[in-house]
Image (cartoon, rainbow, N blue to C red):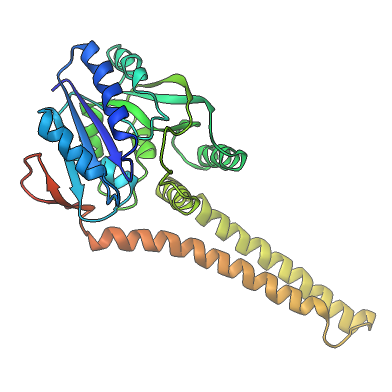
Length: 315
């Protein structure tokens, strides 16, 4: 197989026919042996039915149906695990990422690169708040991680089989695939494009899921939050020591000490707030360690037309 196309699906019934038609038109013109892998991530609409209909008509269409919703990054992981192509494209079904860009990505890959990612010049159809938070997240992540994660990129990219095999050796539960690909290394480059607005339906990436993904990216590739918590502890301890000296001075030297001093309450609340923040940061890291120690399957497959020895993926 020359090329595998991985398409995670979550309530995308309005986009699947158009997406498949555009993919088929583009890839047929490339004259490659391709497979289309749709991963149904617990959709509640007719997405699974449409995918199964495609698979019944086309021999190169594969599908994976999860037992429940496991999340976008896990769906992509399942597609990577069961793909067979020498190159693999990851693309979402909302048509914000154009299938017509795949030939450019593939051409770059043939020049000796192992990863070619699509970099956004502009983002249409998104609110100013979402654009700002996304821009802020990418730049914060780039500044605090020890690896170079490209800014203004998503999961839309093409990777070689060498990269896929490396990703299979990274079994952590809290996936941040674009960070993992950057961590792997190899020669990487990009192709710029203008991201379109969503073709139809509603996005599955709520602010809650975006925050969770951001936490996975930060905790998975940076220990800066832990260092910040440590430094904050020293800074607050220093301030508390200065306040203590001032309190002793006011009580025994200046003589203007007032019972029920308001700053006492301010100091207690300030110290308590910093302690809770530090405990919360440590808790995020411990929760991720706990998830990896339990070694539960990353996903459970309910149904698929791909021959697999097991219906679960165990790290």
